[in-house]
Length: 147
Image 1 (cartoon, rainbow, N blue to C red):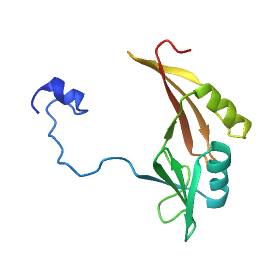
Image 2: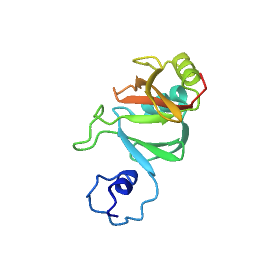
Image 3: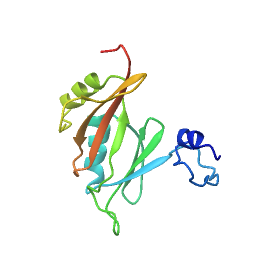
Image 4: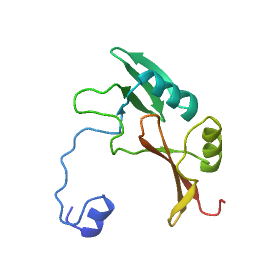
């Protein structure tokens, strides 16, 4: 692909080499290191509202995040809680999701706010923290004309 516009649309910088296909088709799982797997399972299931899938030894819990598994794991080696990863959860109505999760005790650090106006939608976000200090965001792509 030598056309700079086509490279840009494909998500590559103009002149960048085309990547070899890996066979990867989607994100399947995210590992999140937490201090207390049981406490975090309760938070993500009961407060955030993710569907619990299963638990596995030694101290792992798996929840469903819209078709992507969230694996909660205790600290191991260099993996420690509260790192710089931010997980963004897509919601259809950010105001309703914020209200429902706040009522269930989710500690938000801000209110839903407009982040960017796009040609066909407005991008809204707000952020909260889990019991280990991980930052998570709610994101909503509101179609134009919807308040």
